[in-house]
Length: 155
Image (cartoon, rainbow, N blue to C red; front, side):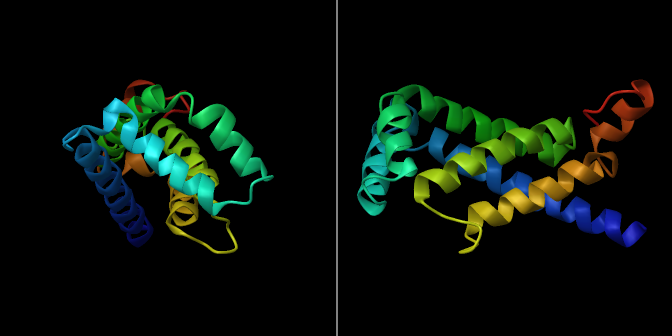
């Protein structure tokens, strides 16, 4: 039992660190990622790599590109928030839900699939495991929150 908890703790720390460092790199980039231009250029590159009539191309062209400025802020703040929550073990299940949503969007944009098993698919599976096992209760603030609010599903 203890070995499983330690494994989940290490996975939680690993994914949290990667999210936080990715968000921090985007936050401190020069020019800043939050201006939307870097995301727009990335989306244009991704659009060139996917088939023109695909659902991915339609999503990128219709929903992601027009809102690249707002989405760039959401990506940066989301990565920092998910990473911080996972590292501290605070509302780990909620952080995993938002992390999974972000990774699904990254998977869609890059045209990845679960059969090619890229990084986004890998992180979706890890976060799903963390979500189902309440990984924040071991060496995290979720342990204290679960004692104070025992009926909540967030921890």
